[in-house]
Length: 157
Length: 157
DNA sequence: TCAATTTACTTCAAGCTTGAAATGTTCATG
DNA sequence: CATGAACATTTCAAGCTTGAAGTAAATTGA
Image (cartoon, rainbow over all chains, first blue to last red; front, side):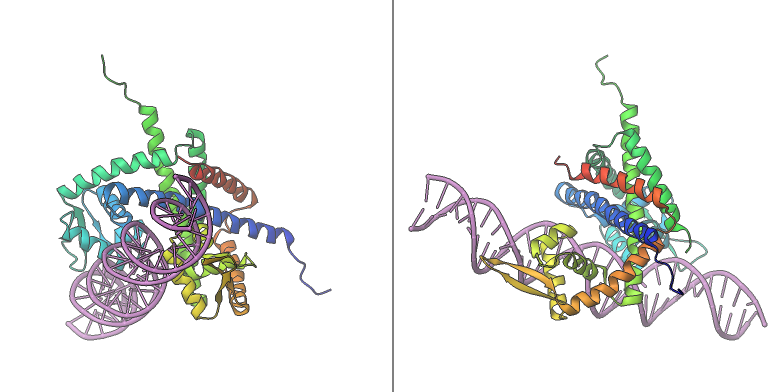
C-alpha cells in the first residue's frame, strides 16, 4: 500500500474555487458590459478612455504613465496609446518631471476635467441603478468579501 | 422652504455601490491577468480560445454560434473569428443544423478535446493555487454573495 | 401567398490590448 | 568614472473586441 491516498475533500474545494472564479468573472462582465454600453450610447465614449481619465481626475498633480498602468492593471503600451489620444483631443497633457527625463506626468486639462465630470456623474448614477437591487448590508458584506479575496490575490505566491 | 431635502444616506449608499463595483473589477482582473499570463507562458495559448473551447467541452452535441456568444457574453462577430481559427487548427468543426440552414453547430474535434483536457487540468490547478488563500467557508460565502449579485444584475431593469 | 420582420451568422473597420523589443535615462558599485 | 543593471516609456505586430452593416434563411401575419 504505497499509494498516495486520494483527496476527495481537497478536490471538492478545488471545484468550488473554480466555480467561484467563474461567478466572479460573470458578475464583473455583467456590470462592465452594461457600463460600456451606456457610455457608448449616451456619451459616445469608451471605457478605456473613461478609466484613464478617472484615475487622473483623482490625482490633481497628475500621474506617471507607470502609475496609470499599475492602477488600472493594464500594460504600459496600452496607456501610451490612450493618453496619446486624450492628449490629441486636448483632454490631457504630459508635463516633464524635473529630475527624471525618462518620465512624464500626465494631467487632465481644464476641458478634460469638465468632460470627465459629466461622464463621472452619469457613471455613478448608472452604477447606482445597475447595483440598485443591493441594500446597504449586502453592499457592505460584498465589499468585505472582495477585500478579503483581493488581499489573498495580491499576496506574493 | 420649497427645497428638496438633501439625501446624505442615499448618497453614501451610491458611493458604496461604486466602491463595490471597483473592487469587483479589481478582484476579477487580478485573477484574469494571472490566468492569461500562465496560459501564455505555460501553454502558449490565449484566454479567448480557452474560453470558447471550455464551453464547447461541456456540450458534447455542440453549440450554436449564438449560444457560445451568449454564454461567454461576447459579441457574435468575435465568436466567428475565434471559431474560424479553432477550425483552421483542426480543434473544432462546424456541422450543419438540419432544418435551419442559417445556423451551424460547433463541436470540438477529438484533437480539440485532447488539447483542451490538458489546458483545463492546468487551469483548474492554477485557480486552486491563485485562490488558495480562501478556505471552504470563505469560498462558499463568496459564491453565495456573487450569486445574489448576479441575480440582481440579470434582472430586467 | 408573399411582403415584412426576425433570426443566425458573417464581414468589416475602428479601436483596444498584450507582450516583446527598442530607446533613452538613471542608478549602483567596483 | 565607467559600465552594467534597472527603470520609464514608446513602438510595434499580432490578436482580441465591439458595433454596425450585410447576407441569407426562417417566420409572421395580412
